[in-house]
Image 1 (cartoon, rainbow, N blue to C red):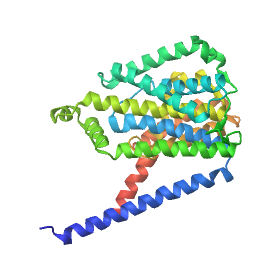
Image 2: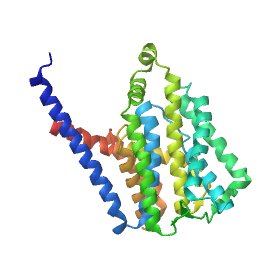
Image 3: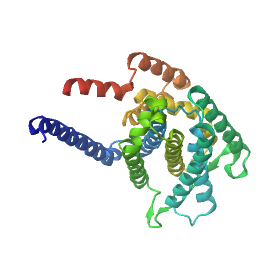
Image 4: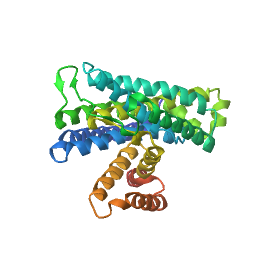
Length: 327
């Protein structure tokens, strides 16, 4: 027989927590819908693209415990494939170009994952970095990428062949919808039984193996999902800026997404979003100031301060304070 006096308070607390979480989600969506009325839409789209990229990376590092130094390859692959298709085939709609770029990133993720997941720690990171550098040199030489010049003038086209994306406002709401779709997929993955197994692997891989889980298969699926979402971010970014360049394939981009994730909070749902917003905002503000040549050192200094002061990242520290006050 269930003791209702002990179950009811727990259920009540869980229900209140669920209501607060849903209200928070709705508030963020509402803010996203009205944001372009107050902030330049192109800047917001850049934040959303990098936020999706950071969220994809966080799925791999924060929940599977795999540190990849090669995620720029997936961002660039999605961007280049989408840019090439939309430039070469004007009749192709932007959503089809983005889907194809995402599929290409997924395929590359399968190859990268199959070659790297059997290694752990720094060895895994070095394998992903080496593979990403191979892709970087491939994109320099490949004829369809434009080499060091990149792909320029990628047409935005018409969504579903009906809605023109030439307007920045229309383009923003499309990017916002793409971000919500990717974020929802990550949220569902994290809170699914699959996500719980990933956390178990992150915390104690030998124990997960002893329980009968196929650890390599779980890692590979997580890697492929992360690669696909990174490719989705790259494809969307190419349509927004009508440009695909080697910057997205450079190892600096892999380092930048690590910085975003660590600043915001590894293993937190909203940490990468906060980290991407902070880094992109600082880059934008510093580039327009006399300190424009000192962007990288300033970001590095901020990173050191945050790591020393907020080991769990910005969102991680906020969550700790919230649990402490509302426990």
